[in-house]
Image 1 (spheres, helix red, strand yellow):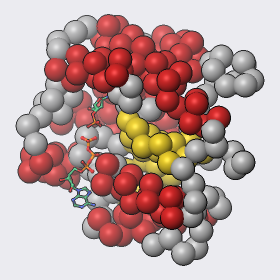
Image 2 (image 1 turned 120 degrees about the horizontal axis):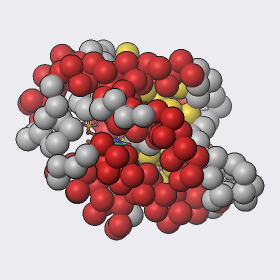
Image 3 (image 1 turned 45 degrees about the horizontal axis):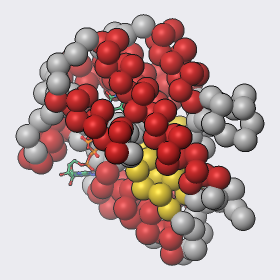
Image 4 (image 1 turned 180 degrees about the vertical axis):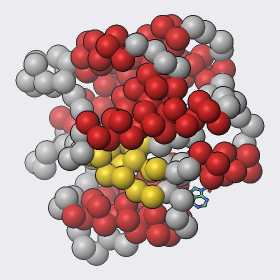
Length: 218
Ligand SMILES: Nc1ncnc2c1ncn2[C@@H]1O[C@H](COP(=O)(O)OP(=O)(O)OP(=O)(O)O)[C@@H](O)[C@H]1O
Ligand SMILES: Cc1cn([C@H]2C[C@H](O)[C@@H](COP(=O)(O)O)O2)c(=O)[nH]c1=O
């Protein structure tokens, strides 16, 4: 059995993550891998309920951080860890980098507390009880805030995060840059302002380079 592969996708709202996950899933399936497509917050019945609260109900910053990690713990226990144990490829639209970017940098919530919650929520689940689960790779779509805002304005009615002002998203983008600087081997930075086809080509190229996708994939 091939080892499981955990790949996450990050970026500010409207960066273009979701547009690429399905194409990647199909490419992995075409080479015989089982793929779990999932998202955060969400991915389980309980975590989807928490997602609805997070996206639409007013709450203070600590409550928001606790709900995000509660959803993540359930998601890890119910979906991510079992799929990785079966040797699947898990493609997850957002994970803990989003918490450091949105709650940490965006809201200004204490990063030290986030580090403690991260450790609590992500440890003790895999075969090695000391392992803190982290993605094998994180594809980060780096897009200017104005470009993302234009895309979203054309796409849908804003939720509680999307309704934040551009200054919030500038901080979130900076938060992603800081996380990427702390884990340069894990992060793959893609210039998400390019045309869709070019972005897709670069995402596939990055995963080919790591030996995870075969040459035949687009
Ligand atoms: N490279 C691109 N060029 C132009 N438009 C794009 C590009 N990537 C995505 N879009 C468009 O921008 C909108 C937002 O894209 P998408 O939903 O993939 O972003 P997202 O990062 O998943 O956003 P969110 O996190 O808010 O769900 C969609 O209408 C999509 O078609
Ligand atoms: C995981 C996670 C997410 N968020 C925010 C970021 C987005 O605005 C929404 C999710 O919406 P999407 O359209 O599915 O990307 O939730 C957050 O603030 N903190 C997190 O940890």
